[in-house]
Length: 151
Picture 1: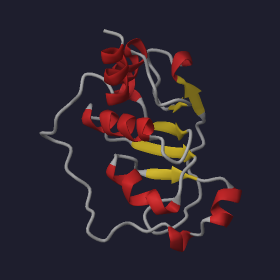
Picture 2: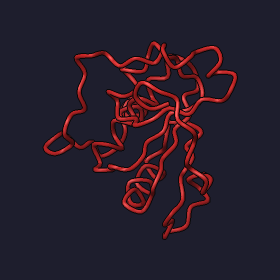
Picture 3: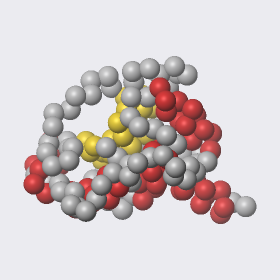
Picture 4: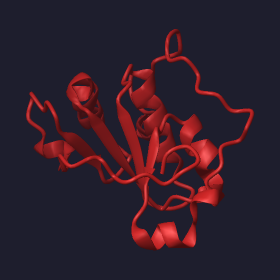
């Protein structure tokens, strides 16, 4: 799903879990099955972002704010490639998903049949925000909360 329409998936390179990525991951996509990254995983991901063509983040449930926080942190870290949401995504949350930094949503056929293209609408007042000059966190917000709880 991209703005206002279903499009065929044009990503054919597959996905690699973050733990299996090499230090030179040119031409691959990384699959983050959980948006909650430890400090070491976040540092590794941030280092590899310039070489990644696509980052896919799984939303584990419909209120998965950690996934939205991670998408925002990835954009704030300077990543301007394809950022894909998949998993528990709802058409009604499409504007929120796009506002957090995702550029596209991956749907399986069952999801697409339950949520047709006309349900995926952006709020007409929303426009992408330029990425320059925004605060860049050292790690995703979900991780910072976890660290604070253990102090």
